[in-house]
Image 1 (cartoon, rainbow, N blue to C red):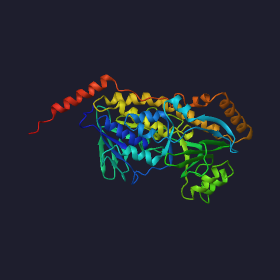
Image 2 (cartoon, rainbow, N blue to C red):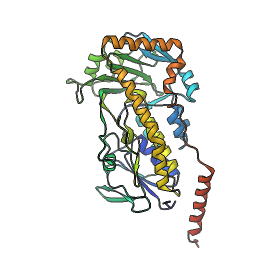
Image 3 (tube, rainbow, N blue to C red):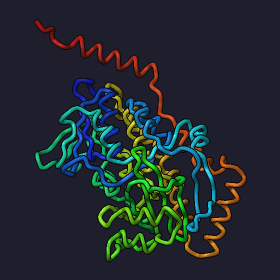
Image 4 (cartoon, helix red, strand yellow):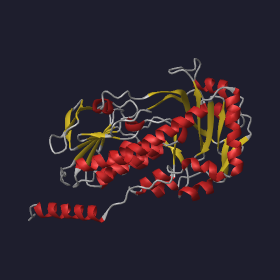
Length: 416
């Protein structure tokens, strides 16, 4: 059932990167949008995020891509290292940009959230507004409905962008097992750049890794991961835990840990959904991002795929088009792609999680051999991921929207 351009109302549950991108893209394609956020502010949970060329091209659709590309800080060489400092493989920022059509951009999540949120009108985002899906709605029939402390809201479309432990997903697919612990935990921090220059790197040890990446503002985004029981925490703080695990690794790792301070290290257990959902929609309700396909961070694609989801969803569900067909097309397009990336991320996570000395030695040797054969082989890991491009508007869709707009204009009463 096509929704009128002047009345179509979408409610987005969750104001993370995917939810806000969806709100901007839907509004751009003709929807009135309300974003409901449980937290009291838009301050994001997390530290840094890497945006690959695929999500940058998605952000081009809402005129944000070039603004993000301008924040790229990685120049020159980088690669993967052994805890001793020995390079296992080498890559180059120029080669990566040429292969995939753009740079890798590392930035603080707060920066990205702010840049996206600026594109929404005042009042579109309601913080301190927890929401639950009461009714998924039926296309061609009743609207979807969410409950909030201030009362129920009916909508032509509801987007569940409420993260890994999504209540919207549970309401849509109560029989799905949901996310499972991936076997490891992560730490993240942002600190001032060290005095001595360094090349960006990700260092792999036995059942652990460390990454050090520059930000455009001169700070450093550092992240770590290690095999650990779920729910485990450092009894004397996470900075002390990092020192125990990584304090004897190569420079600049120990200095970055020392600079992080006891209260500036975020720790989160990793959960992923290796069992895919049957679809990303039901009725008038759709899921995106971690709510739809939580993945391990080992390919750095979680936020990137959420942005892709948002742009593809807005493309297929543009106001004035058939919503049922649009949501079906969204599921058909996104489910296979994200399922493959979830599984590939899990495979890389298993490699990182190796703890036995022989297995770790074989893994490191293979990395070194592949690197010596050519940097293109290392970059090939991201073929089919970083080279993705957003769907293009068709002439028929643009003509249909123009016709709907003309009809709405003709129906408006003349003003005297």
